[in-house]
Image (cartoon, rainbow over all chains, first blue to last red; front, side, top):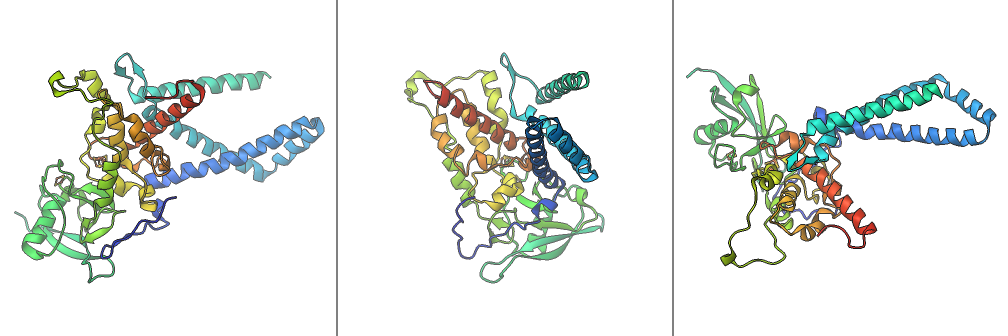
Length: 135
Length: 249
Ligand code: SF4
Ligand code: FES
């Protein structure tokens, strides 16, 4: 955060209320996107623990998987998956705007860049899924 | 002319008298082709001559009539009363800026930020006038044209919660303008603008809420300019770390 500004006498300085993000849908969706990272972080921690337990052998790993089967954790994973999807979709939608792709002197339209990102995402997901199902 | 009217709730603030701004209601004739600015002019001419606000061109060019209309930053010369029926219509000074009086906000902070990004063509070495102008192809113009359409209306600052929370943030329009010059094939000032852009209150202060681009009346898309500047800055930094000759000029 930055230095407090010098306030000039006579002027009225408005303060942004802490509920600013409830003022319009876009602010609210932005906050959701920020919040989604908390869930993704917790999921990653769980995943790291899972890898650690895997390194301790099949018994430890099995016990851990059993813990994760508790209804609370299942609900958590469903919510985390929803947030991860939301985060990814918004991310890819923005990617077209942020990443300028040029072919020769022409700029590829952002919608096309976004569509390509989505396509790539789908392909990678399918390949991973195939490995998982096959494995 | 019909007898229909519409109510405007206009924010009043008299420095030295009022501790805080407060709304005052005015009933104005409803005309199909009137914009909010027409209604304000009606109030000033016929009802209360002390009402203060800025405007000039009345055609979306000068950028001086920006206000909050029902909580959304708008050019009041482009906000039709008919789109807000039946009313009342809330008219407030642009959010996030200090208020001087009624609907008039202080511009100094924005002006200083514009100056800070050096929005002009910088050359490593100026060539003498006798050698002619710096030329540019239509394609080179196209790369930055969108970002040069800004009319400095500051709607984007009013829409930006980051600016509201941390007023030191250089902000959407100033960064878009810096980016516009960085993209210009005639310009060589990237390095000189870089300290402002990569400062803690520069591009990295932005969390990409994106509302600046939604409210911009000129399709400038300052949010895109900021994110692309981040990308350029990060790439530049990476190159300077791994390449012996460093990053960009
Ligand atoms: S970027 Fe758009 S909203 Fe911001 S000052 Fe320029 S024209 Fe106005
Ligand atoms: S009066 Fe000039 S932009 Fe509205």
